[in-house]
Length: 121
Image (cartoon, rainbow, N blue to C red; front, side, top):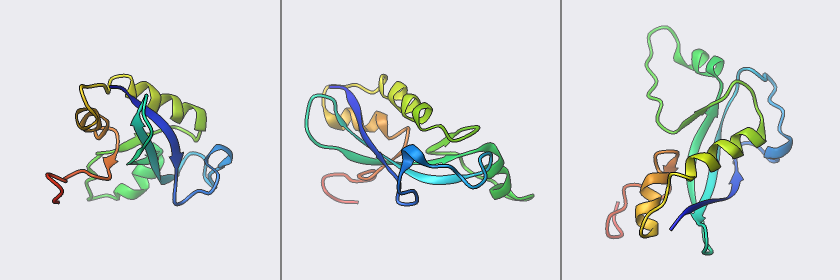
């Protein structure tokens, strides 16, 4: 079974394809990659923070530490490059079943079901 990017969504940005950040070299936003099995219906959300190095620098402050889990770091906003990077990552996410595949995809973004075991958190 292979993973496939079905669509992208952001609660912060209405139209991702036509988005132009106010500060092109310093921005960050939540991107939800909707990913599911390549040959089946359905999708699940994987949350990624898309940001620039300058945005990280502003967030970091002088005495802080940021743990960089589930970050996609870009120099500028380019929708097609982001899509391509995610699709390229997904080429390495295959397995015997969706459970196995989704664990691999969860290295990219926070999986909406991360931490669930047997229906419990």
